[in-house]
Length: 90
Image 1 (cartoon, one colour):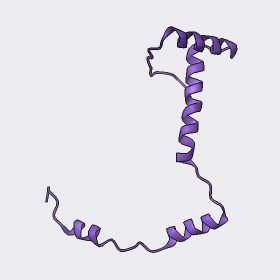
Image 2: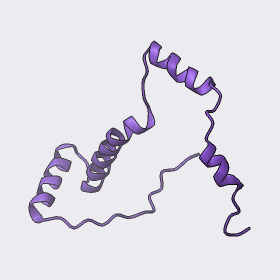
Image 3: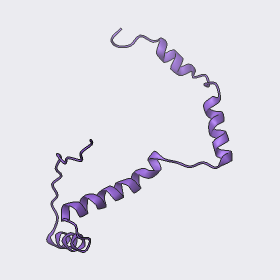
Image 4: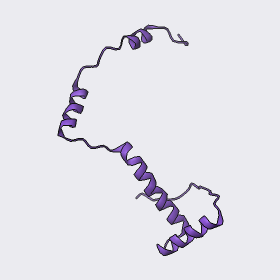
């Protein structure tokens, strides 16, 4: 069974007006200030990270993407030359 045990802490310094606003909003949602802040922050994080984790392609873009994956690698002579050079630990 997986538990969501909270062991890490984040400390914030905010002005009194911000604290009052958070307390009022949390109260309206029937949550503690901590619950309200964590849920709000995670929602914002999901939104920011969404385009970095998932992307959509139409049929034409998907075919081009698959073709790129299936194509043989292009020659990279500078990388080949670099890999032939001795490293600093050789």
